[in-house]
Length: 313
Image (cartoon, rainbow, N blue to C red; front, side):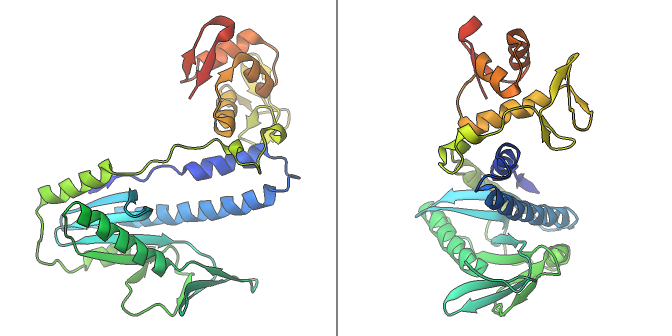
């Protein structure tokens, strides 16, 4: 049973905004592209895990929580947590290209890409050990004792993991149904109500970071961001208003609501209220009444009236 769903990635949305609004010649554009591909790969790995979990016919009582971020000595995040009557399983999902060599002295993972590039990264095994320790401390503070087991899940069978300790459970996503089906049912420590109480405890204690405006980062000054309405069909900026629709000069597509994405882009970039003047500037239109009508038709919080009106998400 899923107790907490996996939410959409805010980081992915912010990177998409930057890919739309940063000029391609900007010094940071290439790095944003790389970060976006890494984020997309990570999300795809989690979605693959969720797909195979949904196909698993788990016969024992359990509660599954996705994207669990808690605070002990510091904030820590776990991809998926499964509470059973005899213990807690923490799944760490990795979607890494190439070969992964796990070193123990020092603890590190070497990623060897197909082009021969070798990159040193923090080992998922070290991350899992830290999460176990922090979760144990989090539980101890609440006077809860629960055996913890960490499982490393690789998204695709083309991933090659070398030198993984024999004691570390590791599997591919497609092996998850059989792993759960054959999991030994051990002696119960808690009943279902106590499991739900722990799941509630985790859900209540989730750490949420208020999102910071993208342009607070000095690498992405607002003055360089491209104005104009974005076309989702051809990825072009510069749609024009025609007879109640936005029309793309590039591909000819019509979109009645294309302004919504553009307005949201600017909220994420600046975090500042939207005014009619600013709306006209970023939508590249001169019609005050049109912008008032467009902003009024969105799900925004309005402050003030007439010329002093401003809007927030």
